[in-house]
Each structure stands twice: as C-alpha cells, then as structure tokens.
Figure 1 (cartoon, one colour):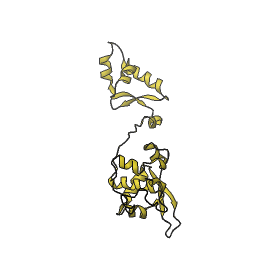
Figure 2: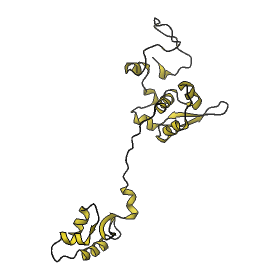
Figure 3: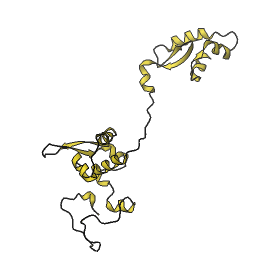
Figure 4: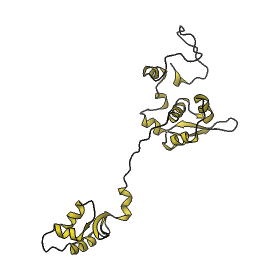
Length: 192
C-alpha cells in the first residue's frame, strides 16, 4: 500500500499522511525501510525529501527524464529576407546578400539562421579577401518539405500565390514582348 501511494503521489508524502491512509495497525515506517532496500540499485529509488518520502528516478538515469520542449520563434523580416536570398542565390556571400537587400546584414540575423541550422558555411570564394559563402542545409529542406533547392517555388508560383508584384522585372523588356531576352548567367531557379 505504501508503494502504491508513493507511486500515485506527485508530491512527497509524510509518514503521518501514510498512516492516515493505511489500515489501523500498519507500520508505514517499516514498509519504507523495506521499499528503500528493494529499490536500491534500480532505475527508481525511495528517497527522503525533507520529512516526507517519494519515489524518484535514480540520479544516474536523470538525463532520461529531461523534457525537451520545442520553442517556436518567429523569424524577423530581415532573417526571412536573408534566408530567401541564400536559398535562391546559394552559394552567396554577405556582401551579395547586402547588395540584394540594399541594407547591411546584422551578425545576429546570420547567427540566428546558423543556430536554426537552416544555413551553413559554404566554400570560400576565390576572390580577394576569400569571403565565406552561405548555403541552405538539409534541415532547411526538410523543414519546408523540399527535396532540393531546385524545388523552391519559381516566379510564376510566387506571383500566383500573391507574394510578388505582377510588374515585369527591371530590364525584362516591354509588356508586349512575348519572350524576354535571357540574361547571361541567370540561375535557372529564376525561370519564369
């Protein structure tokens, strides 16, 4: 009965509380000594907490009981823009991201994306200063349900979803042109 009470109770139970719950003449103190010996060296132990008793996980197995919670954090607009630029232009450098965004990229924005493991460092560019590049990770692809970066939505899909203006790209020609001239070196991720 003492074992059942200790298992069922979330809080430690005093000997007086055990006596009040048990039949007249029962000795919970003796039962606690026996239970303590029975559980010695096992996954759980009968321990004294102040003047009360409880069943707790053995200290060497405490790591198994750690509860992990998923903390949802909303990305800032700067982080979303930076992530999109890296995804569509990878591998790209900080200078390229800043050129596209038109503003400086704070270290915190890049650090947040690195911490989320959505981007990682790529190879260094073979240009003066050897700047580091950024690329998206497998975790990014997994989170957004993509097989590869080539599965990112193109301009047509983004316009259809209302995420882009329907105005033509700068230098894309007049609205009457059926086929705009293909820009040399443009990534096929931006096919229209």
